[in-house]
Figure 1 (cartoon, helix red, strand yellow):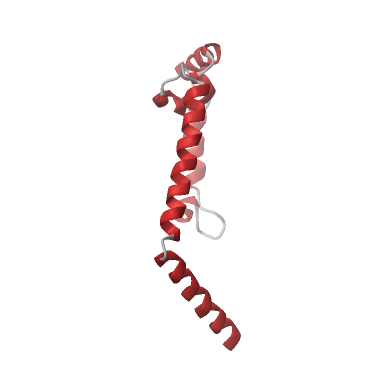
Figure 2: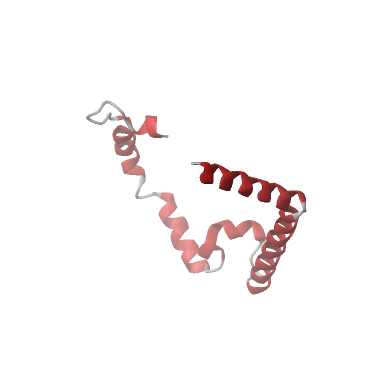
Length: 103
């Protein structure tokens, strides 16, 4: 028990020292640089796609797929199961608990 406590104290002291030395700031800068590189790559690769349309995934790139997706969304096939899903979500388990208690 003594060794575990001593190890935890040493680790916390080391982390505190690293954070106070600016390692956290270096990490943030590295993450920001990676993010900028990632975005620049895709902005160059798909220059015809507006950044706001990236949320549409492949549908922003392939117009035929987008048209098919929009047609499906007119009468979504999953809409019939929303009421069934709601009933299942609200039905308690045999132990009395249910999905609402999990979330």
